[in-house]
Length: 295
Ligand SMILES: NC(=O)c1ccc[n+]([C@@H]2O[C@H](COP(=O)([O-])OP(=O)(O)OC[C@H]3O[C@@H](n4cnc5c(N)ncnc54)[C@H](OP(=O)(O)O)[C@@H]3O)[C@@H](O)[C@H]2O)c1
Image 1 (cartoon, rainbow, N blue to C red):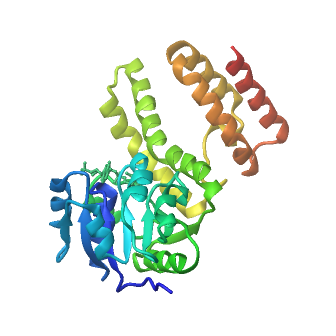
Image 2 (tube, protein in one colour):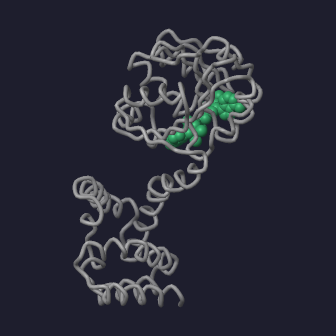
Image 3 (tube, helix red, strand yellow):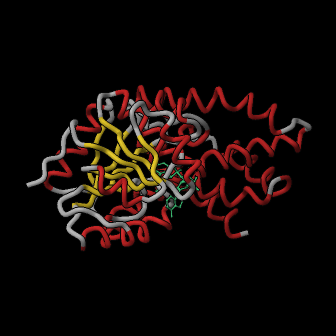
């Protein structure tokens, strides 16, 4: 039976931010990243220049041939074709890093006898050096069984990450949650900062004022969790304040009104759980929000 461990020769197909970051951190933690290919040979060569003793190949079949484990770190849409069109060896490990796709997209590799799995590093990858800093302590969502599960679990622990385990059907919902906390929250920060234009302050300046609050929220969330970290008018039951928000949003930022109401409705159960407001005040707040949603 194939054994996957720290001595396994690792290859990458796809020279993007995730592939490069994962390869650098694996290599710095004693794993052997030996072979790399990508759509463009130049990308593969520049990836290879980051990893001592690795080699770039034009043909992904050479990566498959030289390695015990291959990470497909290309775009989500290309994983299926790469898996189907590469000459895998029987018993070799083939892993993708998409958070939304299950291992089904690797069926082309599984049909050739490869052992397939997926691991999604739950982090944003803006640059290789940033990712190498932030990956330790991050969660890695694993969909795997048997030997591959053991390998990915120990790899996660060796990278000082935290493993969580997903079934194939969990992936779309899991990824929706990740995108909500990631790109959508960042996009929301942009939309909220733009509301400051209404009183003459540009987005950049507004963000400088709002980011310390975002950081404070994250720190409090980390230290005291939900519901204690929630503060503001919803935990105080300040209906007058909430009404003023809704009136102002309706007049000055109507495109944000629905978002505000839906966010408040989603938060209400946790504000109520904090224990500062009665159920009847919570119900009044809910009705007020629903009224403005229907307007
Ligand atoms: N970005 C994130 O925050 C993040 C987080 C966790 C997981 N992921 C997952 O990680 C994977 C890679 O994402 P990424 O952000 O690193 O993508 P990326 O930076 O856009 O890079 C994708 C790379 O794939 C290569 N590629 C595209 N089609 C290919 C093909 N047919 N054959 C070989 N290589 C091909 C491209 O290569 P060339 O340069 O050679 O054209 C490009 O360098 C995805 O599955 C993604 O869902 C991403």
